[in-house]
Image (cartoon, rainbow, N blue to C red):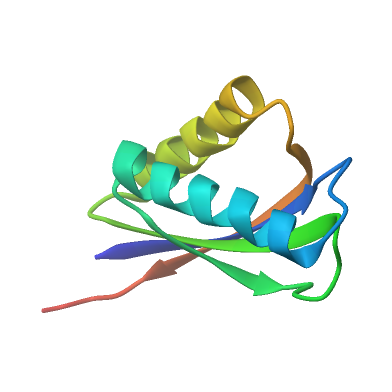
Length: 99
């Protein structure tokens, strides 16, 4: 089993309240789960209006597949959510031997 754990740092230009930020992130997280069947949550920068850190987890059988899914997630955000800017991302690949 392979787990890809990633943090995606986001900039939300034009957001003027935490309520607006939460609405945008809730919508984004639900859509990512629906489109890619991944787990996602806001993991840091909770009180910053125009910044967010999104944690993403992908469970798969091959690291290459998980990394491809993460790349597709990043491209999807860039293409479908012009109101959200990806500033940076980090990823960690965790291999778990189940034998």
